[in-house]
Each structure stands twice: as structure tokens, then as C-alpha cells.
Figure 1 (cartoon, rainbow, N blue to C red):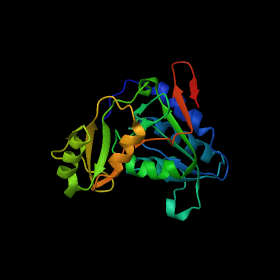
Figure 2: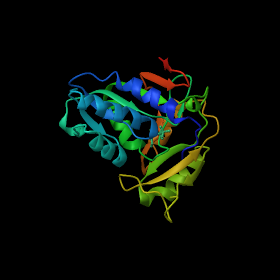
Figure 3: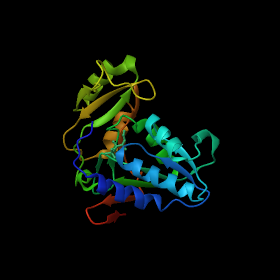
Figure 4: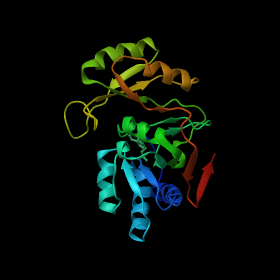
Length: 228
Ligand SMILES: O=C[C@H](O)[C@H](O)[C@H](O)COP(=O)(O)O
């Protein structure tokens, strides 16, 4: 559920700045989406110039792009830790809580981003807001989607099953599950909502990333703004 208006140059600046943080020998979480893709390409170029890293992709697309870019790939189970993760966001609030999952990749993203010593968010200015109000993507077991819809209503939200654009039927995630886009209006208590959504049976993972981001790079028309 992508609803943004950033430019490719803004995204490129943010992604390329974040890629500069990657050091020799690092294990790097490779985020998903159009902004993280610029970081992956930049890491690939650095790899061709001699940087030694291993990348952990967070989606089918980031895995494919990492391979094309020449980044050696590994999985989370093969490493002792993740040095840095670079990932995009659909919305970023004033406290750097995030909504992710516009590309339905948030479940794997959260596992990798949370495992990282440093989680760096890359975005364009259209993603920054004072308070979150964007619908929260919620990945659900296929069997559970109708029950989760009802539970989301009980939490004061409205759930919409995400549908494919070039395919009839629902979007199916890289994990074989479905996505409900859950509108709650203004989210004044992201921590509380995150906790409640995590407690709903059938929810695999939701797109509220609370207290996870360490650094946010926002690409602008003439540079990069760093939000701590
Ligand atoms: O599921 C997708 C991810 O959470 C993306 O990181 C997020 O949607 C941002 O993507 P983009 O940089 O293309 O706006």
C-alpha cells in the first residue's frame, strides 16, 4: 500500500548515504522497497571495489537485487549478529516509530532490522509525519484473516484485505500469508497498538516498528537530513 510522493533522487541520496555506514567485514540487513534498493546497489558497487560484506535480504526482491549487485548473501541463522540494517519506511513519526509493509515485506524486515546493532531508516520527505495515521499492514495466516478482521474492529480499526494489481485475489506474501491493511485513524499510542496487534491470534507480524530505528536519513532535493 504505497502512498508517497518522493522523488527517485531523494531516495537515492538517502540510500547511498546509509550505504556509506557499512564497514569491511559487516553483516548487513538488506531492506526492501525502492529506497533501500539504492543502498543495496551502492553496497554492491562498494563490494566490487573490494569491500567484504555479507548481506541478509528481507524479501524476494532484495535477495534478487543483492545477487545482481554481487553482494554475498547469507541467512540470519548463519550469523552471530547483524552489524547494520538499512531499510525504508512508509511513515516515520516524530519519535521515529515507523509504519512499514507497503510492499508486504514487513515480517522478515522486522526480524532482521530488530536483530541489527544499528537500524538505519532511509526515506524521502513524504514519509515523515508528526503522528502516525497511515493504515498498518498486518500479515495474517490465510485461515485467520476473517477472524483477525473482527479482532481489528474490536480494537477500533477497519481492515481491508490487500488485493493484487495484476492478479485476481489477495496479495500473498513471501511467507505465503495474506495482508490486512488496518486503518485506526490517528495513532496516539503506537506502543500500545503494537502490543495489542501482536496479541491477536493469527497475526504473523504487523508493520508498526516501535522503538527500533536508531538513525533516519531523509533524502532531500539538495542533500540528506539525518534525524537521530
Ligand atoms: O514492505 C515494504 C517495506 O516495508 C518498504 O521498506 C516500505 O514500503 C518503503 O518502501 P519505499 O522505499 O519503496 O517507499
